[in-house]
Length: 174
Image (cartoon, rainbow, N blue to C red; front, side, top):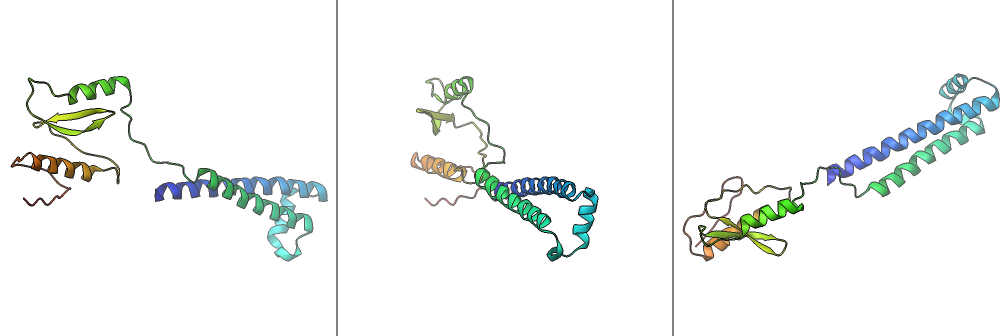
C-alpha cells in the first residue's frame, strides 16, 4: 500500500509540474505579447531580476502557475488516493475454472481420503491426502491461517504425521 501511495504522489506531482510549466509558458507568451517583446526576453528578465522587481503581470503569472500546480496536485491526489497500482491476482471466476475446481474438490467413493481445503462459493473443496500444494498470496490474505487450520483439522482426526515446509513454522504440542 505504501508503494501505491508513493506512485500516486509521484503522478500527482508530475501532473502538477506539467500543468504549472504549461501555464507559465502560456503566461510568458501573453506577457511578451502585451509588452511587445520576445518571450525569451521575458524569461531572461525574470531570471536576472529579483522577485520583488518583477512587474505585476509577471507576478500574477507566477502566482497563477503555482496555484494551478498546487491545486491540480491536491485534486489528483484526492481522486487517486485509493488507486491500486500493483498487479492484482488472477481471477478464477470463469465458469470453466469454477467447474474444474469443484470437480477436483468433490470426494468420490472410489477415491482415497480427502482433506477439507476450504470453500469455493457454497461448495466444500477437498483435496487428496497425497496431493501437494503451494499456498501463495500477498501479505495478509490468510496463508498462515489456512495452514494452521489444516494442521488443527488433521490433529483432530488423530493423524500422526504433518509436514509443513519452510518458510512457515508452526509449533504443534499434542
